[in-house]
Image 1 (cartoon, rainbow, N blue to C red):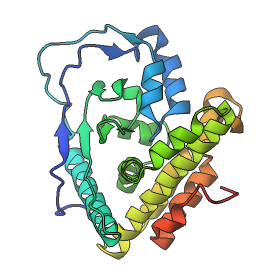
Image 2: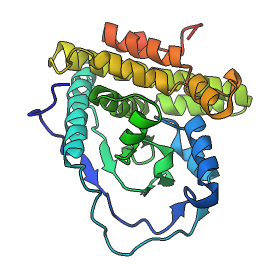
Image 3: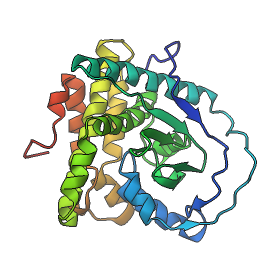
Image 4: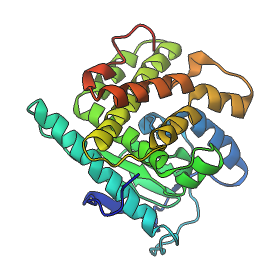
Length: 286
């Protein structure tokens, strides 16, 4: 990805090393089990509100003083700032084309755990978007996990992570999140999960629209970049994560979509550049 020398966003809030007081139980004896639950439920863009409410909070070790941020992350901070800025260019233009103003989200960098308007979340939750404060949250160590555990290396794979969360912000601004939440009330767990899948796949499609603009409009995409994003989308499909963590696949429990679905909808956004093509709620087959 040709990101060096590009505009950096002013909407990055660096909380790395800052204390949060109370922490989510992500370490110790229960850490492994929690990590599996989080990976199955939330990884890469789920609804943090419900998850944070369900996770046990404990009084963990914390410091009242600010700690230095992890070393060696300066270039990565620059990178995510450039990617966020490029999503701003895409969605400012898209919203202007329909006579609306795009409200740019804040991207919060944190280490270990963070306090959001959706509650306290640990790094094991992965990157997430909180609709209550309209902010994206990411512990940059997640990118090591993306490369090591999920075998999805590359800077464009990392950019896809941010673009997907920005997709949730776009949904929030358009009122789609609220509509889905209303539809999920009073239905079965399987039906609620199916709606969640459609929401997540739409965010993948919106991430593809960003990639379309980054490529066609600003020439930031290099050979192999789209393959990196497609590999990342495939790596975090519900079926693949379930198979690797539990040895079996339960489609009714999907919340994000299968690997094939995630790849298909990202590709739909990338190949069309058309928001209308991302209406996952009006198609029969995902």
